[in-house]
Length: 369
Image 1: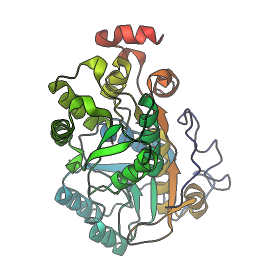
Image 2: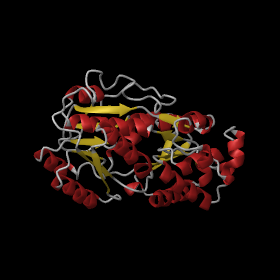
Image 3: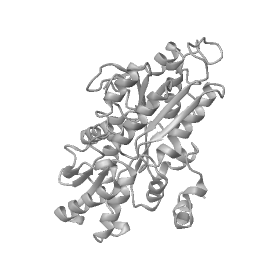
């Protein structure tokens, strides 16, 4: 993958894509002559429901942006596969049969979905991979810089371990082996962990399941001893919740929990960061990703090539295709001290949503209340 510059920004959601000049000033919805009208159908396929971001953020933002870009005439068709490969294949086949104009695909299994991507291609339906890089003849890819996500997690974890050295034992709880992003997260994290600490145990987690993560963490505790674990790399927030349950079941008190990473800035994780149970998460500016995907989808189906090319200036490779046009969005390390300037400032959560009675004292200490 050709990487964008490693720069962890403080917050990006408040900057509109058009305002940044990313989409090119020569084409817009009012002045360009599209090959199709604004009366278009955008299929949106999401992978699973364990992570709340897809229903709470990604799809609503995509839907709203498509509506804006098509002057209210475009529509979206949404389906979530709940982690099942066959379900997503059926959902995608239906969208092909329904003759949607373009498909945004967040694949459950990047390899197994390839035949459906080819079917869409044969039906002249562009497919833009969203968040996860699907195999097959996709037309573009919009996601975050996934290796950077792992690097941010790994670097922040090492920095959270007091006087970290090679003898410090870290447990890695990685994502699903069917998700190509999980491998990129792992690679990025290992680039920061290797040589600085010891990865004593490492697990891949089927379907990103918090229950599987909890079970694997229990195995690690049994093998290493809870007191010998200096830190835990959790690839996302949902699994971090399961990891914390395993540590507490082993008798580790809140004040003695090792630093634990996460990803996605889920509300429960933000509250755990406030309370000190979880050290960090990765805040991924969903609006930037989702709006870019909607822009790319509409531009592609309407034949606005200059817009599409301006948006997808990065290039990535999949196992089946090379130099895929891509947009890679940078990310933010979310820790206790920047909750106010990131997710609250960007309107992801309100203070009242975060600072419930249980977390009132922690919020007051950070001057959120």
